[in-house]
Length: 177
Image 1 (cartoon, rainbow, N blue to C red):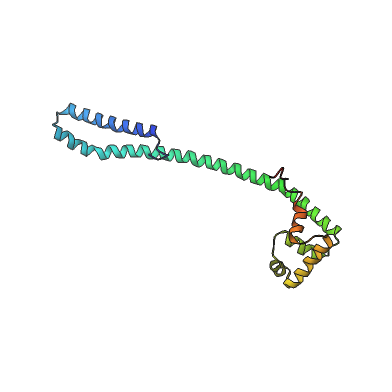
Image 2: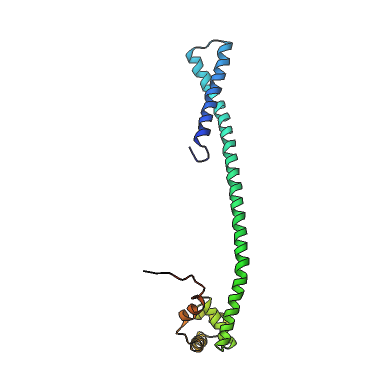
């Protein structure tokens, strides 16, 4: 049996089959007595009808369960959508604040507008080649601007630049062994 047809449903389907066959034979025997061969032939004749009836009941049961599961999934999806929207709303303000903090730090480092843009694109994880494509310049120019950013910031490279801004955002790891 599948998850949709549980033991209880299977049990009641079996009871319905037995009851249907018993009722049919009870009515047939009441009208006229039958030999065992005639009873077997009658059983063969009514079996498809009884099975179709049971099948219809099982299909309705499965359909009902699937509908219930669908409604539960839709409720879960709506909850997830609301949580996602709430997270986006909450993080929007935080990200705006982070953007302002990064911009302030760039000002303290006295970065030029081009250096600010390069530094921000590097912080976003773009390669120098990608930054050059976006800024419509050569990779060599981007490398020089990146070196200038690192020099003005007193940092050793891209990883140090990222760590400068991310270090305080991440939860500290306590007692790493």
